[in-house]
Length: 303
Ligand code: SIN
Ligand code: FE
Image (tube, rainbow, N blue to C red; front, side):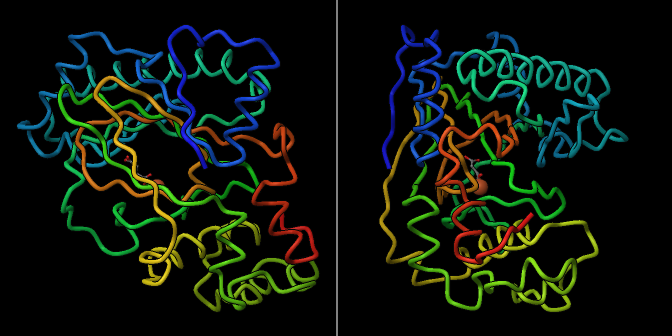
């Protein structure tokens, strides 16, 4: 696992270089841009930073859904409509800029992703008081409880827009190493069972019991959700796994496959983020994708 630094002179890669960046991401590296390729206008950054003291209704978990051009996490009944409109416009423009940049920078993925949510993260991460499974200061891989991916990969692009403070992460070794080393037998897909039975039955085979919601999740999604919880709830993993700290400076960007690189944010305030769900067929190294790794363990298709 490595951090690959990309200088501003490297933002227009050749198709071969672009493919090599995809391969690095897929093997668990973080691509780091000391100077963000998607800078915010100074007035927009100023507006977002100003949300600190504003009505709390404007600074919870603020998500922007690009496909329907909607904000969530903002109480539109109490928030100032002009401020909400401005926030929406800033996130819309951020989302568009990230998409335009990555369409070029990661050209093998272009048209093979589903654009997921963007978010504004205005809260201080240090000492946040959250229920265990929602804590982001514990190492975890990402999985969405309500948005199954069916094998698509979760790629996240971040901006630290804090003018003075770093955003402090710890990461660990990627999925293929972690899953074999730490997942206990009962969490791994059982050979044969996931394929031969669908829905609830597959959920039971994966140890999810009756807790599986009737959401149309694949056995793959069940496992990834369960693995997220397992890592957060596992003190041995939290204390013994290899840990690599990174402090992302003000004005920087970085991206990483958060579904396979265990990560935690320990401190920092004010970040922007855009998520992409990259489809399995776009992988340049499909053999190390979590879908293939798990299917190898299960000896069965999982989506
Ligand atoms: C996370 O995905 O766990 C949080 C990352 C961050 O907000 O820096
Ligand atoms: Fe996460």
